[in-house]
Image 1 (cartoon, rainbow, N blue to C red):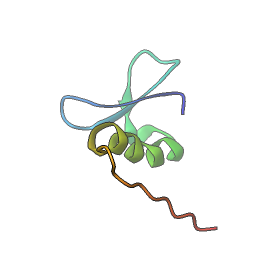
Image 2: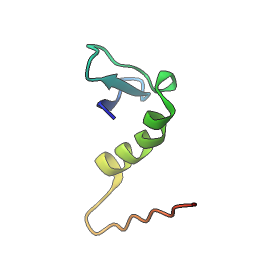
Image 3: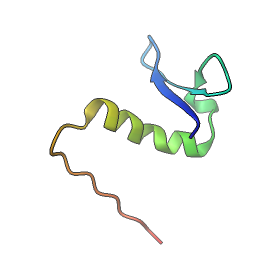
Image 4: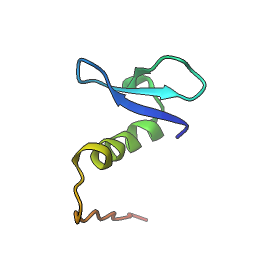
Amino acid sequence: MYGKISVNEYGELQFQPKKLSSPFGLHMASSLVKSLAGLVIYFRHLARKNDVFRVKLFI
């Protein structure tokens, strides 16, 4: 994911690719970006020291 996830003044998630100067709504981003955005927000704003994060893969 080459870019940044941010929250605008209205509380909406936005994605700004490294090659563009302005962000756009997450609804316009690829499915990979949309899928990872929740993790980015969790780790950046909600996760605390000693929290446990588990990933279960369905293969």
